[in-house]
Length: 480
Image 1 (cartoon, rainbow, N blue to C red):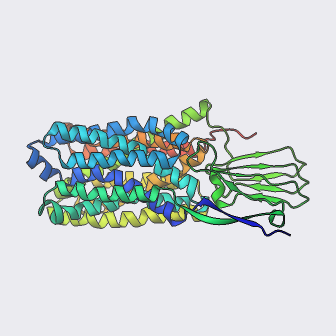
Image 2 (cartoon, rainbow, N blue to C red; image 1 turned 180 degrees about the horizontal axis):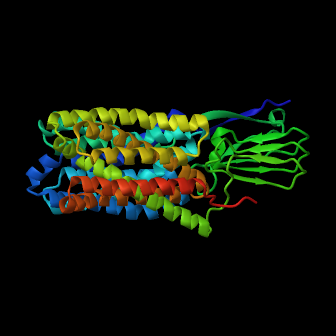
Image 3 (cartoon, helix red, strand yellow; image 1 turned 30 degrees about the horizontal axis):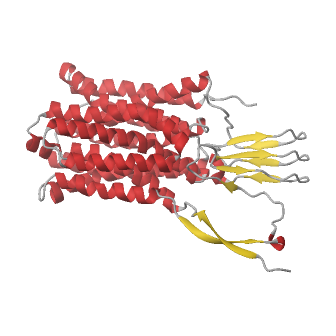
C-alpha cells in the first residue's frame, strides 16, 4: 500500500474572539469622528472661527450622508461580503479622519465629514453582518451589546482627549490618533489563513458523515451549508449555534430525524426535503424569503422605529448637561453625573444582551422595555426638580444606550436572507434620528421651553416603544 500523499492546503482560521474584536473596532473606528467633533467643539470652533450653527450643520451633514449611504451599503455588503465592504469603508474613514485633522475652514470640515459619513454608512452595517456570519446564535445578543458598547467607550476616551491631547498638542492630533482605531479595525477584518496538512489516498477516504462545509465569507451566498446523507431512524442534522448564517437541507429519512439551524436561526434558511411524518425543523422562528410586501413594510417600520428611538439619544447627548445645570447642579457636578451614567449605561447594555441570549429572547420585547424606561426617564427630566432630573437622567441614558443592540438583534433575525439590507435600514433610521433629534429639541425648547422639548421627545420615544411591540408580533415570511 502506497503511503498517503500529504499536501498543504490553506484554510481560514476560525473567527473566535477575532470576530468580536472586528465588530467592536469597526464601529468604534467610524463613530469616533462625529464623537470627537462634538467633544472638541469648543477647540474646533475657536480655531476655525465658526459658531454653533455652522458646526451643527457639519454634524447634520455627516449623519445625513450616513443614512443615504447605508441604503446602498447594505446591498453592497450582502453581495460582496462583510470583509470587502468593511475594508472599503474603513479606507474611506481613514482618509476622512486625516482630512478633518487638516481642515482649515468650515467648508473643508463639512466636506470631510460628508466623506466620513459615507464610510460610516458602509462599515456600521458590515459590523452587524460580522455578528450574523461569524458568531454563534447563542451569543449574538451579547456580541451585539458588546459591539454597540463601542459608542459610549469612545465617548469616554474622547472626553479624556480634551485635557490630554486637545489642550496640549492641538485638537487635530486627536483625529490622527483616531486613525489607529481604524487601522486596528482593518487588521482584524483581514482574513487569516494557515497551512494545514491534508492527506489523500484510499485509506484516508472519509466515511459518510454530516460535515459542514464552510464557504468563503465574502461570497454572496450562504456562509455555511450542511447536507446530511441518508440514514436510518434517529438521524440528527444540526448546524449548531453557529449555523444561523447557514443553510440546512435534509435528505429523506425515516421518522424521527431532526434538522436544526441553531437556537435563533437568525440568518439561516431551513429547507427540508419530503420526509415521512414526524420530520421536524427545530429552528425557532423560521422565516424564509423576506422579499414580499410584508417584508418591505417591516423594513420601513425598522427605519421609523430606529429614527424615533434615536431622537432620544441625540437629545440626551446634546442637552442633558444643560438640563442638569438648569435643575440646580454646577457644571462640574453635571459632568460627573454624565460620566457615572455612561459607565452604568455600558454595564446595562452588556448585561441586557447577555440576558437576552440566556433567555432565548427575540430582542424586541426587551428593547421595548428599554425604550419605555428611556421615555420615563425623560419625563422625569421635564419636571425641573433636582433629584428627579438626576434620577431621570440616569434612567433615560441607561434605556437609550440599552435598546439599540436588542432591537438590532430582532431585526437581523427577522430578515435572515438580507441581513445587510436590514442592518442598513436600521442604520438609516438611527442616522436620521441622530441628525434631526437635536434640531427638533432646540426648536421646541426655544419656542415653548425646555420641559416642552423633553415632553415632545418623550412622546416620540413612547411611539417607538409601541411600534417595537408591534414588530415583535410580525412574521416577515410565512411558514411553508
